[in-house]
Image (cartoon, rainbow, N blue to C red):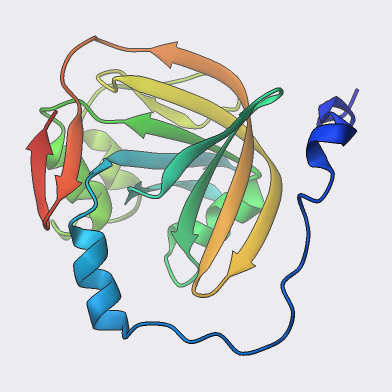
Amino acid sequence: MSWFDQRPDDAMDGAFTVVGPDSVRTVEPAQFREAMSRLGAAVHVVTTAGPGGKTGATATAVCSVSDAPPTLLMCLNRRSQTNPVVVENGVFCVNTLGHDGAAIADLFSGRTGVQGTDRFKIGEWTVLSTGSPVLASAVIAFDCRIVEVRAVASHNVFFGAVETVRLGPSGPALVYHERAYKRV
């Protein structure tokens, strides 16, 4: 049975309604970025491995979509070096960082200057069902296979069927709020 066959048709009725072509008025990008900085979000390292290579990026745009079937979404800027690799590999793992994960977050955000697979030299890494890197210290790891990708504005929205979940050490998580890491 495919992923699409598992979705209940009655729950999907109207789910893909398209908004008309009329132009939409939005706030200025700087104002939007400032407002979003005040929206605290969990910090994740999204990783992938496969034919396109092995890479990862720090992300806060991750959320649950459904539990029937278990699905989440994550967003990556299409200009990021990680984006085309995730597309080619067709898999990704969302590693939610614990309160002590700021150094890993900085590493995968590009703030340290370390690039490519050298980023995986820090931390303890393993794999689950998709082969994407899983950080042993992650509070939770969602190992996903891509079922759909949507281009929206500057980003790709990746919908992933969750194949495997690994519960990590319990405790406070790392969030990003007002342009700083904080513990929750």
